[in-house]
Amino acid sequence: MLRRILTALAAALALVSCTDMSTYEQFVRTSNAPDGVYAFTMELSEDSSYDMVICTRDDAVAFSESALQVLRLDLEWVAPSGKSWQETVYMRSGGQKGNAVTYREDSVPSETGEWKLYIKPSAVSGTFRGIGFICTTEDGTRQTP
Image 1 (tube, one colour):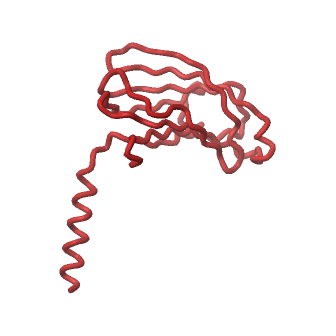
Image 2: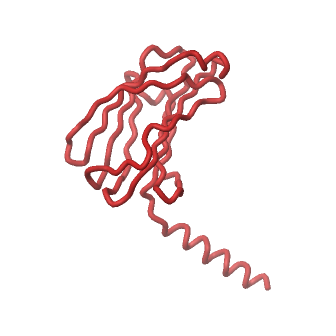
């Protein structure tokens, strides 16, 4: 009986380890963001659609206070071909428990390959802890690289 359970567990672990790592989740601490730019690199496929979430955290601000504080984020996307796009988005500051907002839903990249995302927040406090980026495939799975 124990042998069957161990065999089933080993098969399940082998199956999980073979899954496609096309989804992405990362949190970059402020100490790892030179010049205040948070960098993310991920593999995306033009054959898939993605939901994208941006997360922030600021240890000095309680969430109830941060609800009124707006954080400006300047984003730059760099495609595998080297083309780049810039945009500015706004979200509420993260507070001690953090904040996550949907940035894009059902986005389909124009190219397959390694994409780079650079996020530069403006006017953050010295207690700002970092920015996270989560990219989830359409089927709802999420994996950490």
